[in-house]
Image 1: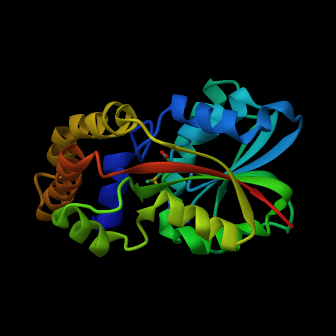
Image 2 (image 1 turned 180 degrees about the horizontal axis):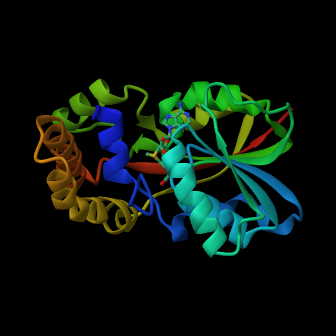
Length: 250
Ligand code: SAM
């Protein structure tokens, strides 16, 4: 089994595949002002098994197009949407976020929790803008430095993994340069990392390793996750996800 299949196997049973929570999605909804509008069209990009898509479809008057390039995740979301009675409000789409098959000015909002880094924050904000109606909302969570200076170990890790990590002020400046007006920002609380993502994942490690007979590749994946968890636990004052809510301006 290759590494991607192993990662899918580790994450498929998670209710989410990155830091976040229902409360976090609701806080972003509240800052977005979308609650006031009927008949919304929303795209949830890099939706995983659909934690945020389910909240968006439940809380808003919205049709949600939930996009991911892993069909296994989309199947889980389809099943969860049916069980929640949201099957007619959530449509899944197997597509890559760097080649989205949408018409210009389709969506009232584009949502992406813990996913825009796959294309890059600036590249995603730039490429997706045209799919928003004028005045539409971009709502994305993104790994963010909380301080001007960071411990060297933390800096070196993320420089190697995702050099686009930056401070909120720098991310806001990117959004402004690309034709957005920032309307809200908040930092994800520790519970979104620990209670809703890392602890449930750690509970799946033993079963995962057993299913793969402690293969070298499976053990390397667990070790990489443990390294990331340990970094977060030690340096949580310096790094988190920031949630950025911005409006397309023309
Ligand atoms: N938004 C979900 C959540 O918060 O639970 C999932 C976050 S997970 C960290 C990132 C997601 O992006 C994964 O589901 C992954 O399959 C998806 N992804 C990665 N690269 C992608 C691409 N090029 N196109 C579409 N989806 C992609």
